[in-house]
Length: 99
Image 1 (tube, rainbow, N blue to C red):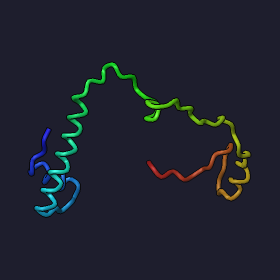
Image 2 (cartoon, one colour):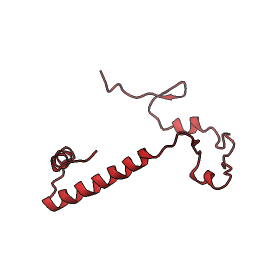
Image 3 (cartoon, one colour):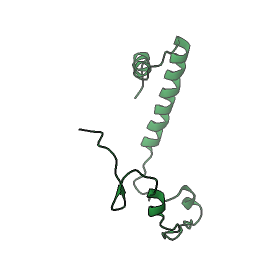
């Protein structure tokens, strides 16, 4: 897929950008270069390759450093809601803003 100068003009218009002719030409070259890279990557047969959880996993074992999912902060709901103008059953009450 290759972009044309008209495509660059439309993209610039949608993005509300004012590009000079030089900038437009440079953008066209850069974007078409990106699309060329994508096409090269799509051409590679990856049907027998298993997905990696982490890029480094291809060269070494990776142990994910996950911590235990435990609450570490005390519950301070009442203290945090003391300055609220209206609270009901632990919830902040706010005025209706959408009809």
